[in-house]
Amino acid sequence: MEKEWKNTLFAYVNQYNQCEIDFRPQAKESVIADLDVLLERGSRMERLQQWYREREAVPLRCETRARLSKLVLDTPEEACVDVSLYIRLFYEKRGMNHREERMEQERLTFTRDGGQWAVTRIERSVPERGLSAGAYPFEPAETVHAHNLPLLNRKVTGPASRSRNARYRREEAVDYADRWWNSSNPEFEAFEVDCTNYISQCLFAGGGPIHYTGRRESGWWYKGLAAGRELWSYSWAVSNSLQRYLDSSTWGLRAEQVERPEQLALGDVIFYDWDGDGTFQHSTIVTAFDAGGMPLVNAHTVSSRHRYWDYKDSYAWNDATVYRFYHIADQF
Image 1 (cartoon, helix red, strand yellow):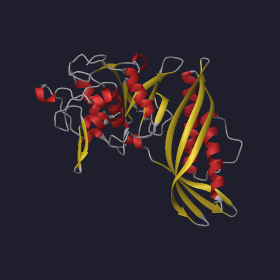
Image 2: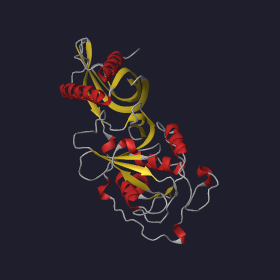
Image 3: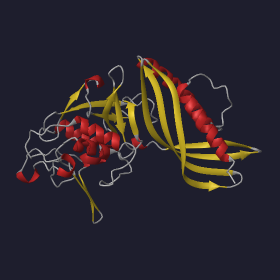
Image 4: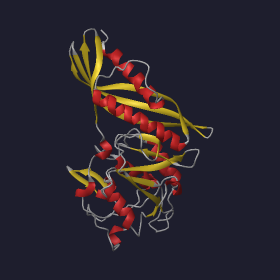
């Protein structure tokens, strides 16, 4: 027998779609009975309306597909489910249509009141805020020795030499980012907070040379998981450490910090400090541009493809958010 609360889930998804593109007061009665969520949603809709106005963009439609990933509780009076929301958002800017995609995770609690079901609790994790990198040390490797020359995986990067004149293949970095935006390459470890691991893979696929030091707190390298030990540098998998590496590296994978997002090119990287406290918690890679020349980015953790760079639609964003923009060197 079809679960009765599933009809409320369908109504919830429909209202979710409407709230992503229509910022007027909703005519239909909401299926949400969580007052905190209703207050938050009202503030978010107001922010999104201003956000689109500033971008000179017009939202067109939102299509969301819900998949039940876990049934936590199911009784005649209450149900609790983990849901994956695959969201496709379409918008227009300067006569050009754009589409962005992202995956959100929610835990929904449904409660029966008489003959009606309502969503009485919505729990959202904000994984972009996870894995605070401030606890991880980072030391730039000042001296390059023979044993830590760039190690190029020829299976990934082709028959490149160990010279310092390897080219950053931006299109290949972007192709890799689009190929794996909502899944994990099985050749690599998948992290609970996976954004920087994913960015490092994209940089490597574009020809970024591994700087192996054997020390987790220096260089930029990955060797996987062996005998229960994690063999990767902090800069490979932690946003703050990769940001520090790019800030200090004068050899191998290098980047120049720029002031504005419109100075970035395909395959460049953006870091996000949600609290403005100097610790960067999230990273993305530029994979496209909108009709106004502003970057669109891919990311993991909350898997995203061609998302507008400033993340003002994210539950992690707030007024204190600080960005860093890095243009990856064309030659290594």
